[in-house]
Length: 399
Image (tube, rainbow, N blue to C red):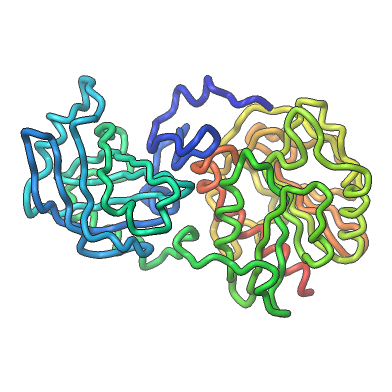
C-alpha cells in the first residue's frame, strides 16, 4: 500500500534520507534504545576533540578507536556553520559543546554513497551527513567535511549523561552483541562451498535495505550461508538455491511481477524441499495474485503497525538464535483467509491478520510474513527476526 506519510510526520528524524527510497535509521514512531542505535549503523568510533574554530564554526575530531567496524578514519572534520537554526538547535549553540581534549562518540552509516552520523560530544547528541558518491570505497571520502544538521534533543531517551560514560556503556553493551551490519558479508553462490545454505533474494529495486541485512547473515550457530540477489522475476538461479527470500514488495507494487512460469517454478521448488520466505507485499490490487502459493491465502491492505503477537507454539521462532522484542516489529500489508493447513505463528498488533505463518507442501515449506521493510530503520528494527527466520528455515532444511 502507499506510504503513510501522516505517520512519518509524527516521528523523530534520527538520520536523514540516503536517497528517495533509502533511509538510514529514518523516521521512527517510537523511542530509540541504545541497542537499536548500534544495530542501525555500520561503524562506531571513539575520538577526542582536537581543534575548535568558534569563528568559522568548525571542529575536528581525532579518531582514537574503531569500536564497531573498520572506519580507517584518522580525523572527522565537522562543518557546523551549515546547520539548521531553530530554537532548540543552532550551530552557535552546538559549537559550545566542542571543547579541545573532550571525548566524542560517533555512530555512522555508510551506504550507497551517503554517510549519515549520530554523534555525542560534550554530553549532547547531534547529527551530521556528507555525500561521498562513488568514492566511498576508496580513500578520498575520508577527507570530506561532515555537515552538521541539528542537535538531536530526543535522543536522551536512549542515553543521557556525559560522553565518557557513554563510551563505558557502549563497551558493556557491545560485549553481548553481535551487530549484524558489522559482520563480513556472506559469499555469493559461485564462492560457496557444498556446506553453505544458499539464499536467493528476489528484490524490488526500490527497496535495497532488506538485502543489505540478509547478506550479512553469513553464519548462525552451525549453519553457513551464501546469499545472492536477483531482480529477474523468472528466477534463473532458483535451481541452485535452498531458500528463496521474496523481498519487500518484490511480488509487485501497484501490479504483479511474476508470471505463470515463475509461479510454477516456485511451487515446484517448495515441493522438492526448498523453503520460500515471503517478506512484505503490496495488496492495492486486492491481494489475489497468489499463483506462487500452493495453499489458500489472501493479501490484505493494512496500515503500518508496530508489534506482533506470537502464538505459544511459535516460541522457538522468536527465541532462537535471538530473543526478539516482538513489540517493536514493523508490519504493513498482511494476510488472511488462510486454509486449515496453514499454521499461524503470530498475528498482527490488532490480532486480526497473519504476521508470521507457515504452510508445508511436499518436502518444503512456505514461511509467510507481513514485515514492513520500506526504510532502513524498519529493517534494522526487524533484523533480529529476519535472522531467526533464516535460522528457522535452516533447521527445516537440515532435518
